[in-house]
Length: 131
Image: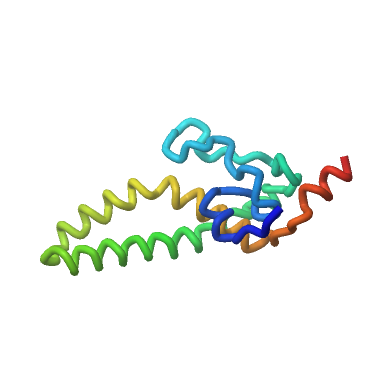
């Protein structure tokens, strides 16, 4: 199996250990039902996704950083292409944040988990040998 970048596994919402198992049960980011649901373990390598109570509170830091990047991007685009207006900025920024919020939530959890769990190219093989 070729080595995959952690960035790609985060964007695709895959397990950071094996880069193949899904992090969320509901693969549709914009479907409300089951939006927050994650499996307890990776289906491919059995990596524990519920490491400890409150583990994903740390994902707020990555969510905050991503939100700042989105805000700055909207600000720069408005400043470059339109005459800056605070009302227009707030309206467009709110709209963009509402549209991106579900994906940002999931990516933030994926980033936090990828920071804590390192990639193991033999993770699936090790798990299959144990069972």
